[in-house]
Image: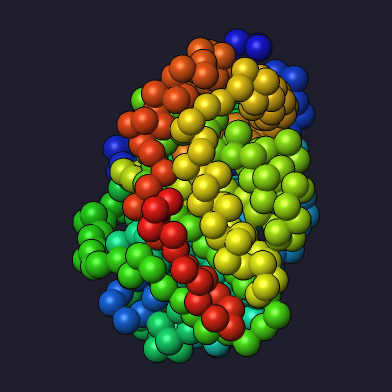
Length: 415
């Protein structure tokens, strides 16, 4: 792969800048992570970060809400705002020559947002609509509720908040969340694309150097939910969620864990698709994913099926999770590596992907991994390494949540 030049720069107020020039693109992208995520929602006010994420875009600096949106559109910024446990994220991509103007707007957004009182209800209503949509979609709901039961609070609380928490919010509460959390300390800005390193550093120093640091926010922890649970829901379908411990992104065995999950759930030749859906026809959807927080990781699994086939679907899925440790073929690992190489090539061609990946790396690792380093880690995987990893981190101690008209039995001989 092409040589990567990646430069990091620390601003005195605590913001870390990561710049990666990409010679073969005409675009430039950024990913700004502000440490004001849902973990820091005040007790009883889950959703403060989610409402802030919408409200903060409704005017900043010298521009009201409409003027800000218009200027971003004129610059052609393809943008997104998102909520995570630790951060509110602002991502955008545009033509390289438009990046300085776009960053100038985002400097205003995070440092001098208007947070207009007359638009608070609209921001809150948007979050409430998203939460109602989750309630109305059983597939989403079971996975949201699974996180409550496999992670301690606040990591298990939905980053979107709760209907009760959002209903309790007022403009003052969300402003306090902004004033308490949204500062440059531990913030991360990734920039990638057709950019110059020295010019990028000078620009970010100019735009963000005056951002005043705040005390590091804190949060309280609480217990997770029950390991076996059922949510009653009248339907002809049953939704199944399964979780068990794995390793986080910073763990040396992360890529072995990733490969194991890819063999379980990477494409139509994967174990779960083949054994649960294709051979037995038990369900219409089944998958597994590796979910990594900073200091812990889980494998999260989902299956959606009919009420009549739900018990067998759960039994076979658990059996397949356990059976992975009994043997993996060279062909399965080769297919896994091929998928990873395709993904790396696409990352190499995307300024948005590089900006976001570099920012994520810095948060999880305190450094940036190059694409060549990732490729080498994947190439070094062997069947023996994967099986050794599974011995150390077996599929057991499952958290199982079902949503449907009747609960299911968890076969303790398997789990």
